[in-house]
Length: 127
Image (cartoon, rainbow, N blue to C red; front, side):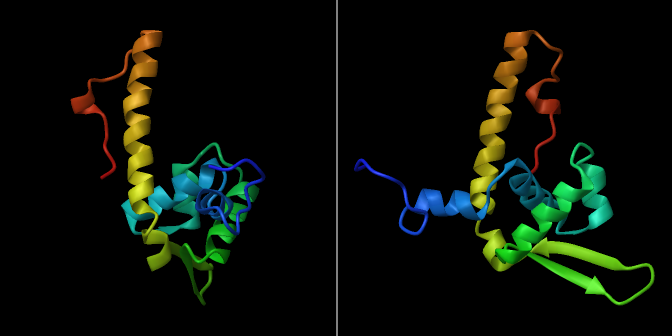
């Protein structure tokens, strides 16, 4: 690696982070991968600590980058569903590795804090 600035138009790592940045976008991709199709309200229920404004911004950004598809149905009340695009699906191996890494290190964190975390056989996996 050479010294100097990292240009997202040249550096693959910087480019990826510029496309999918922030903590919520990866989680949204993970939810859409596992659930296939989700309505806005379903995503909000699964992510109770995210504000409506941030969720909308994250969904708009993922749609702009063509990582998710937004299907709007002309009905009352309005119905909108989100799903992964083919481009979005190409990120799933990265998301799976992130989930695996997080599971391994979360267990270490809990054991260090002596919390009551269920055994690995009882924890939910998302594969």
